[in-house]
Amino acid sequence: MRPIILGVCSAFFFAFAFILNRSMELSGGSWIWSASLRYFFMIPMLFCIVAIRKNVRQLFHEMKKQPLQWLIWSFVGFGLFYAPLCFAAAYGPGWLIAGTWQITIISGSLLVPFFYETVQTAMGTVQIKGKIPFQGLLMSLIILLGVALMQFEHATELSVKSAILCVVPIIVASVAYPLGNRKMMIVCSDRLDVYQRVLGMTIASLPFWVILSIIGALTVGAPGEGQIIQSGLVALIPGVIATVLFFSATDMVKGNMQKLGAVEATQSLEVVFATLGEIILLSSLIPSYISLVGMLLVIIGMVLHSYVSTKKPKLKNESISA
Image (cartoon, rainbow, N blue to C red; front, side, top):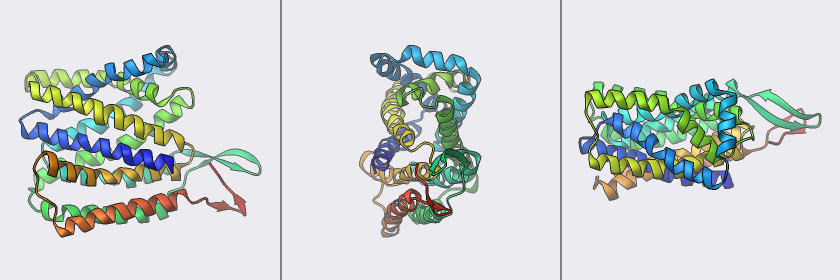
């Protein structure tokens, strides 16, 4: 239950990314700076945490052993995750981004066959290829139905071009985030804690953010003071607090792809938190009854997904546990 609680808390803090990114877009800020500044600000914050824990040297030692793996999967998990989300904010409101982002639940489940999970049997610990959790996917459809209801009235307000430029980048991000996270868990194994892993991935993704910021400087100029401040908040709240909480939750269930999918399903609550945040902070309209029913379905779907994903399966009359 603890990983689920941490997942819900991370969803709350992750919601600030959608709200603040939309706020920066409405105030004229470029998505390029919204994306790159977050990770520039995250480095000193995370470095202080890891330094206080006296784990910096160990992190660099691990990164030197597999530098290419760190560069590739950090680019996937952070670069191909956050840059598309910020790009999407230029073509759609926060509610649509937060809602569409929930397909990461399905993306995470469909990635299961590409990984191996650790199971304990009467014969000892073995590695078996993961299987798509079809029961969990069924529950995910309930979540997506809720999301569809929440966004039904608003989706008709967007042009086809804006919808495509908003939705396609989010689909890319929904695959990149769980893929990069899971690959880095394999690379790090149990040698690094979650703070070290997040700092290492942030540092390893720096080449991408530097290139992106150079493009930004040449095309849109320097960021404004307001965007710098809000980017700092995004770095602290979703970037550090939410990411550490989420990675801590996934670390607790690594090796069991079904339970990992349950933790990732808690991120469906981002759409609820983002909607409430936009109402309170950006003075958005209160959702209609249809949207409220959608929120309820999202919560019900998340709970049911977590339940079926954490049930202990049996194979040939042998109990399997993670």
